[in-house]
Length: 426
Image 1 (spheres, rainbow, N blue to C red):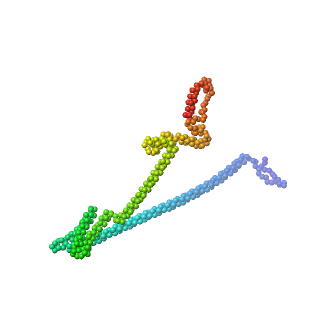
Image 2: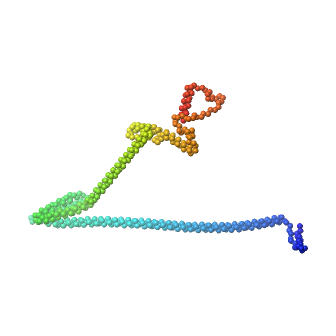
Image 3: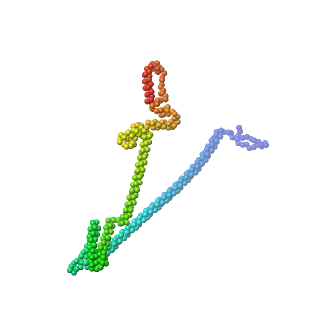
């Protein structure tokens, strides 16, 4: 194969093109170079895309981190603001509570002060009234003494015995002294009635003298007036002392005594009504208990006649008037062999019901219960089927059924024994 060939067009030769021979090794190397270059380019492209994707991912992660940080900062700021608001609310509530407490304390103190001032004012008023009453009584006593003394002096005056003029002073002054002794006895919590009796006796003597001498020497008006003065002065003062004594001893006034008696009567009536109500309730409760006891006894006698009859015997033996719960429990155990609400029949019924429930849970027929547990068969009724007995085949040297002949009496006894054993087993 030549490197060039000549082609002609219309007889004119064309320029010859270079021709190369096909070299597989060079072609393979070129292909390998092109493949490697393409792979490198692809790898570079992939690497660039990976770097770009990584940069984008890092940028996205940075953005997410920034967003999370921003959200965390905002959340922290909101939480701080909320905490601050809550604390401020608590502080405001505490301040309001403290202000309310202070206000209540101030109101209580003001009310206490007002009440104390009112009580003090009342005490001052009472003290002032007592002082005025004491001054008025003393002034009245002095005035009455001044009015009564002249007639008494005139009654005792005698030129031959001028010293008798001291007798009126002794009578009036003695009454005053004795009344002061009564006041001292009252203050020291001693008996004072005899002081007051002597004072009234002296006042009565002075009044008698004024009345007698006034009628004889003057006129009835003077006699009555001076006699009244002799009685009124010590009487008013004794009235003052009497009030002071009653106040000291806490004696109630007539209105207070009347109110107290009324309150006591109301309380007595209420107490009597309460006692009557309680008695009626107790009577009704006792009647209800007795009726319930009778109904219970009748029900027990009707449903458990044997147990009730035995319980009556036990109660009579123990000296009980009624069948108590202890007696009934003992009688039930003696007859039924179990505590009340339990018996062989009840236990058997419970076992049967439990077996039915168990069969329902295991999805078994209920009629198989009699085949397995004999729940419905009484203890005295023999079984419907005899137990299966395995009879192995006869072997040489081994006895089989019918080998031994028994007498009729022995066979009957063996039958009775087997039947008894089967009944016990059932």
